[in-house]
Length: 318
Image 1: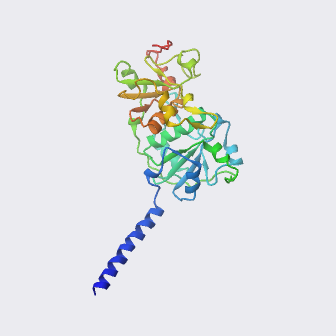
Image 2: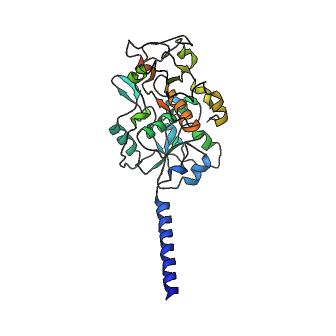
Image 3: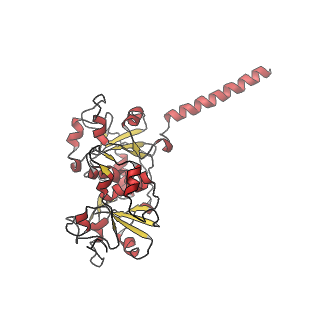
């Protein structure tokens, strides 16, 4: 009798283990398994998972388009043009700002992505501004409350570097699903909050644009004035990217580039013209370096200069 009881308990225990294993296989990838940057090998090893969506965002910035996607893409990918797909929207006459919760739910859900989906964002992998497309989409998923998202390290360029990696042609036709946004307003700031923080001694403003824009020698077409937000520190996002390899610099090199006082600041605000280049600095500092105090000013200089009373500086030291 004891043997029967012991055997029964053993079988029940085995059943629990098997059931848990089955649930694991059918469940979304655990957040611990998804890193901000994933390799081509990681993607190849997980590409067949039903809970994974490979999101190709090639667009005009990298010389790509929907036609480029049709000519060749990672098998199983869906395409959403970063510039035309709705990842940024106009709000109160200011371009390129974060969409509303309802807009994000429609955009993401129509790509076949629900709240249990793991997303790998695939840029072209050609330059820092192209990486900015992926960083801004990545930030948008996080802002929408979706954590299981990553960027393919090296992008489509890294995938095609190995001729043995398969390429698929034709358009994508994702099956729409339901995505529920849970916005994280603490991840972004607006012009009013930046203006209020100018003299607080606790906030570091990080300007990710080229030097000629920081000093006012050039400006974005939609900005009303040239220069930078007073007190900002210049940190050109392009320096974080190695165009030769199509990848971000390694962690040690990135840490060596950080401006003095950055890691001690109570709050860091990353900005540029439209929150695109600023997304690169946000990604590098938040997701690679691990700085928890950084926020994105998606309106950036275009939004800042819409209000004539907001100050603008040209001197590198002001």
